[in-house]
Length: 405
Image (cartoon, rainbow, N blue to C red; front, top):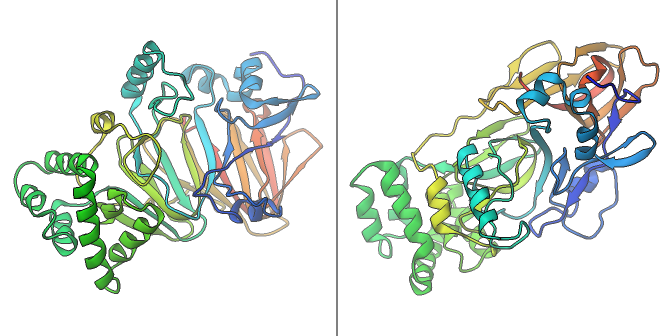
């Protein structure tokens, strides 16, 4: 394994992505900066070519993906480099939603590779608005709340959907409600959602009008009936505003998390969270957006089997660290809670890690290296595998992204 010129812990200079649904204040507050006036939606920590973090290496500021190309084994670790084609397998984000994101799903690895190759052969530019697949990777993900965090995820049980649609659209969706009582749940739900997205505009308008009228009368009964008018206000005339009656509506409290596998239809509605995912930007949208929606391609990848949401319960692995276990091979999220300023915690490094401090002040140093880095709120660092081990001292909370080899 070729060694780097200087082995150290690197502070990351991260890209901030601006989307209309982003918060004007949440990410600037995390970073201790004044608001820029623009909605700041996501901070990316990683090596995705769309928006790689930058580090200082060999006397110059370079994108992290280029640094990994130079020293793949030293940064990633030999096992991670071998398992993931010498690429950082995860993408770490802070997400701050002040308005609903698009309803979306992500392909599995086979679907991503097939779709990416097909669109390449068709000559569709990577930045084209009608491009579905921007890379060949899948995108399972984990979301962990930093503030109360609202979202939609996965299809409700058919009986629940039937009852909610009868409450809001008994007239305009009577035929579809009847169909829900026949056939296999996954099949009838896929047919229902495809129909909603492809109805003529006049029928969508009639469904929305009835849903809004009935939801406003029932707003005190359930958050479902409050979110339908809120989504319609954010995206007028978008039929997906009725999705809280079809998809599981959730609210995570700070520290609670969810795992979203490939094919799971979901949307984040409001709040700030830590997001960790496989290193991909493949998104197929299903509503609440002005962007491209490819209904046929979405239906190919969509998992419509109903499920009840199960929040991730963190597993205590030491007196200071809790791990959110998921089936993902590319990433593992944990939170390190340092409680006293005098304690020192040693962690061995078997592969690359990214740490993000969300509160407090923690000193971190590579074992055997005198110079330390101070992690304060909003500061993130990359720990290359070549470091071997590092020591934390101080008081604070740190979110840790690693590879569960």
